[in-house]
Each structure stands twice: as C-alpha cells, then as structure tokens.
Image 1: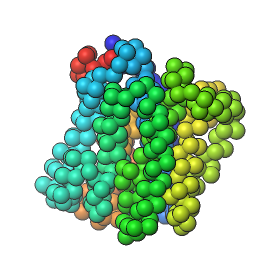
Image 2 (image 1 turned 90 degrees about the horizontal axis):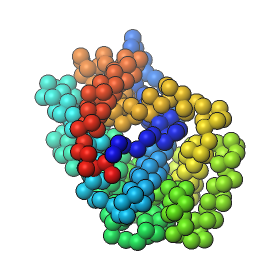
Image 3 (image 1 turned 180 degrees about the vertical axis):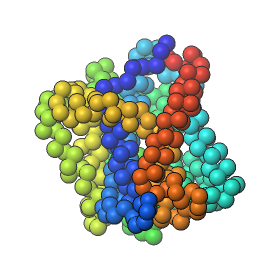
Image 4 (image 1 turned 45 degrees about the vertical axis):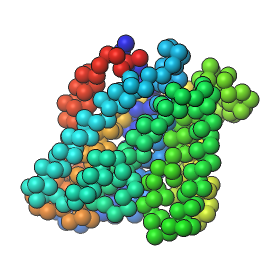
Length: 363
C-alpha cells in the first residue's frame, strides 16, 4: 500500500515553523564582511516554532494510527516502528557521521558525551551541551513520543488514548511548575525541553486528531462532541488566525513563571491546534493560499533536513566557529549552505530511505 497522501496545509505550517526556528538561530550570527545580525527577541521565536511542530506531530501520528486501526482492526507496533525508523534515522545518523568527520578535522568542537546523548535521544535531559547537537532535544522528545504512543493504542481500548492525552495536558503544566519551583537553576533547559514538561504540546495535537475523526469522536462521548462543536465555529472563520498573535507572544510571560508554566503554554498549544484544524479544513482564504504555495510547501517538505543541518551554520559566531568553517557560518552564506545541505539530504537520504522501506510497514 502506498504511503498516505499529504494533508493540505500541514507542509506550509511546517515551513512556517522551521522558518521561526531558523530566525531564532540567526540571532547573533556573524555577517559576511563584519558585524552581527541584531534580531533581538527573535531568539525566542524558535520556542514557538518547535511547539507548533509538536502539535502537528501529535495530530498527524494520531490521525494515521486511527486510520490504521480502522482499516486493519488493530495497530501493528512493528510496522509503526519500522515506518518511523526509515523516516527519522537515516538523515539523523548521516548528520551525526558528518559531525564526527568535522570533529576529527578539528573544524567543530563537540564533546563525545554530547554525541552519545544525541545518539541515544537523551539530549533533552542534558542541560549543558554543545551547540551543534543542542537542537536534538526536540527530536528526542518526538522519539520518546513515538516509542510510547503506539503502545497506548495497542494495549488499551479505542477511547483510552484520548484520555491519556487529556491527562497529559494537566500533568505537563504541573511538571513545568515543579521545575520552576524546585530546579530553578535548570529552568531554561528543562522547562522547555524535558519530555514531561513539553508533552502536552504533542498531546494537544493527539486530542485534535480524535475530535476530527468521526468514529473516534463517537467512542469518547459528550466531551468530544462538545469540542467538535466549538471547532465547528473556529474552522468556519478566518478570524481564527487571530489566535496566533497572543499564542506567539506567550514567551513574553516567561518573566511571570507561574502564569507562564501553568496557563500561557497550555493556551498556546490549544491556539495552535485550533489554527491547524482551520488550515486542514479550509485553504481558500489568504493564509491558506500562502501555506499552500509552492515555496511554503517546499520549505515544509525540507523541514526535517533543515532542522538537522541549519545548526551547523546558524549563530556560529556565538560558539567561535574556526576558520575555514567561519566563512560558511556568516550571513547570508549560512542560509544558502543550510538550504543546500537540506536539499541534498532530502533528495539523497530521506526520499531514498522511504523508497527502501519494506512494503509490510505500509499498512
């Protein structure tokens, strides 16, 4: 069976998310000829972009699992893990191998311990790590999700995953507050990156998939019907996109940790889910057309490779990139290099790996 077709609008949203991440990493980059890029608050945009990625991931994977369960009257854990392995691992391990090569040449500095954390997807619990593997924290969170979420589908009732996701949306804010209260020295690292603290972003997307699926919605009962009625209003109006503005600026509330950890992040998760629902339902307005444009979709298709490779080139002035690597880390050369590496990685690694995937994994 062929892989499922792309969902309209999601690639454009992925493209927007990776642009926010890259903009945040450009803050402080050296400029060719001298100086640095003064992007100010842009350094915080990446946090917002990653959260959008998480909500999309929860929505998409849960949607696919629900469809698989309906077609085959059950979930194949093996098939799921094979699909994820062929999708994620080849490009990721190529990136790590390149890092090892650059490290051997003396062009980059990455401690062996940090590489080990990256390879084992524990970077999000490694509070002090090298810049070139720092971004693997979000991939680590996703891998933890991929490991656990299909098991919930396989061993529990059809309705159980929804309530597990709902419970997560209550537990994660408490985990964030606990870090703020008891581990303030690790606030910037753990509260943004430890899996228990950010799992509600993914869980919100999971719940959206349930609410949008008629069969799954019927298994949940009145709560899902109520949520669907609420979404029926927001998906009909382009004014829904106005939610992006307060959701985007929630990072400004970090100076008020109680409000931010317990309320603001949860609000932004819900706002992003509502916008995703609107985009998937209707692409006829200006925002939808922009997200469906060839440029936005192409950036979205490249988003995983861009996510991996941009770290090599952006904001390198902050970590004293050595010559001759410094030239590739200066703006605008760094953007060109990041997109070039992402294009090559997608065409030669990602696409080929997906074509090599066993047919038995395509359920």
